[in-house]
Image 1: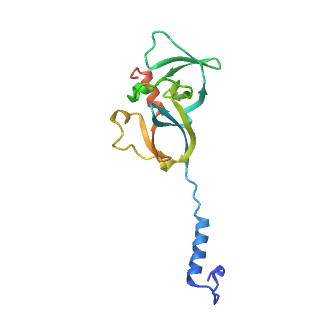
Image 2: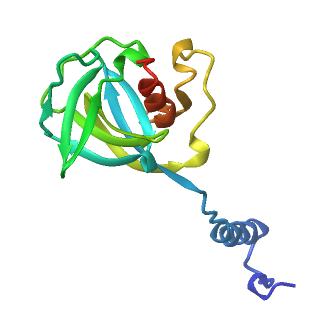
Image 3: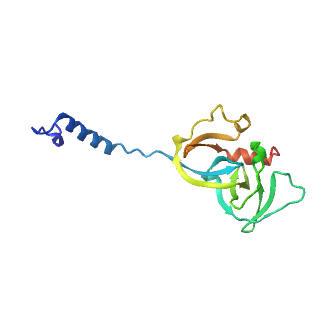
Length: 177
């Protein structure tokens, strides 16, 4: 018999069961793998990228217009001597264009061999979540997002679509944006 649970005349079976439950609760501490997400908003809709694909968040970077560029390319930005394009992903996602306001930000992302700035309306958060919190793509997701979406997570009671940077930048580089 376990010495922690010796029979005392004043100890009830319920008290012993509570003690055993407390001991078991201490043991069940499982570390679940987590992933870092950069959560942002485009045209009022929340999205996320895996943090490993976002090299930098550029607030207030000056973007230079390039004549003759496609409408989805805002221009170029100088990042410590490297010139990177800045794209607006709304056309790939078929979202209405939004004017870059004071809270708009550029996510410097790398995917499918391409590095580019991605203009977002605002960054909402950067956080680690359990990998299991990312659910498969639901059937209610707009069909044209299916090739860009990796899954959906519910954060703060709101569904956030996780986008694939590799596909987004690869499609843009191939002229599908």
